[in-house]
Amino acid sequence: MKKGTLTFHGIHLSPSQIHKFRGFVGNTFKEYDLIHNHDNETGANIYRYPLIQFKLLDKKPAIIAITNRAVEIFTTIFLKLDSIVIDGVSIPVYEKDIKVEEVEFAFSDDIFMYEFLSPWMGLNQKNYAVYTDTRDKSEKTAILKRALTGNILSTAKGLDYWLEKDQRIRTELQVREMNVKLKGKQMTAFKGVFKTNFLIPDYLGLGKSVSRGFGIVRRVI
Image 1 (cartoon, rainbow, N blue to C red):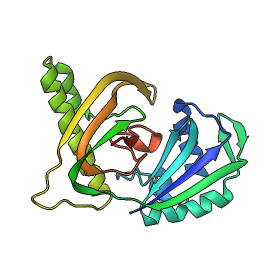
Image 2 (cartoon, rainbow, N blue to C red):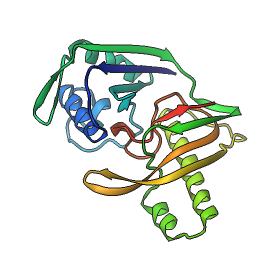
Image 3 (cartoon, one colour):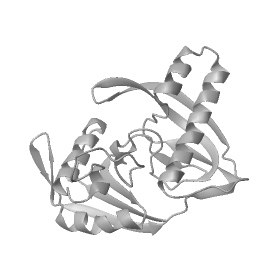
């Protein structure tokens, strides 16, 4: 699978400004619905795994594209994006790097360890209610493991990758709770590490709001 990384040097944004970065790029290149995930005719949301994601990597703003179709858009962005406007302030882009590589996204017989570089919002409305009502620590962990497995499966579906009937995703995780703000609301998220028998390319996101920089994973072992 092809992955592209577009990194902007010399520009400093806070995590809370990543959604504004995404909004600016999406408005600048409205013709590409893969960036903003809205139907260009109706304006309706397109519900799918985001193939173009906006992040902070090593404190630098970056855009990640996954799949050949998404990476193709990078050429246009790379050539035409010479400034970024955040909160009405125009920030010139003097230096940017683009990297395109083949990566593995697949089930494996081996176990790999990953870390969350940004808060993981893995719970949906239903399992969040169950999680908060549960007092038993082991059951809370079990809920999070099931959520993580579901996140991996939904990502695989979004990338058109399907497991064989005898393939089962296994997960272990060690995370801590933290509060984050999303669209002005306090949300529960998690940071820490996890293990799974699935190969995930570095800097892809799992869970909710991955296009805004949440749930970034990086392989540790």
